[in-house]
Amino acid sequence: MKQNTTSSAKSFGIVGYPLSHSLSPLIHNSLYREKGIDAEYSVFESPQLDRKKLQELISAGVEGISVTIPHKETAFSLADRADSASEIMKASNTLLFRNGSINAHNTDGEGALRSVLEWSPDSLHTGKTLILGSGGSARGIAYSLATSNRLRELVLCSRNEGAGKEIVDLIAKHSPVRVEYVSPESISNLRDEFSLVVHTTP
Image (tube, rainbow, N blue to C red; front, side):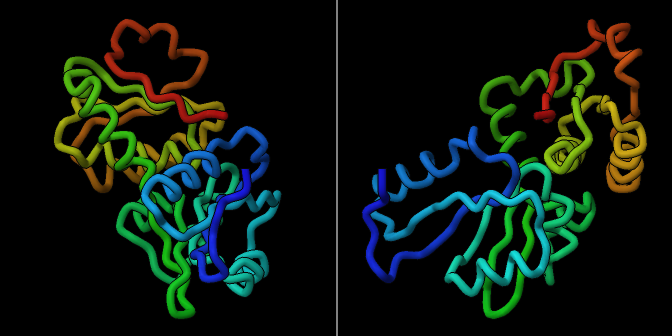
């Protein structure tokens, strides 16, 4: 359904690849209509993300984008400014275009933590927390959970060992929480130790 907007409507969207499965446009545009917000949220599917692509969006009047697989780490690298979560974990899921500046934010972790605290707060400290994956979402979620002062222990498991261990090293520098990397081959031996599993892979 075409969003009912005016010529002065604010323009936002999502960048990633592939995006045929994304519910973001439906969710955002439904909320815009419900709240009476004059804005439109579009799909900007692209296998590549670079300065040229961002400039095209800015020139078209886009004021901000959600960033998803596989561009979250690239999004951070293209930003002029970034929030603390992005700076520490080197990944961003939101870019805002303001006064000629590209501002990066990572809200993945904040959203995940809020959901866990709402639906299963005890799971953070009754056992170990397992994060599956080592991409941009895993980075943001690992940071927020590890710095929440609620986590007992964090375990990262991913097929990309180097990326998984990089997240472990970054967390260890910024949180006193015990954190370790475990290979996919070994994770089944620990399954009874986890009270929370966060799946971030496609």
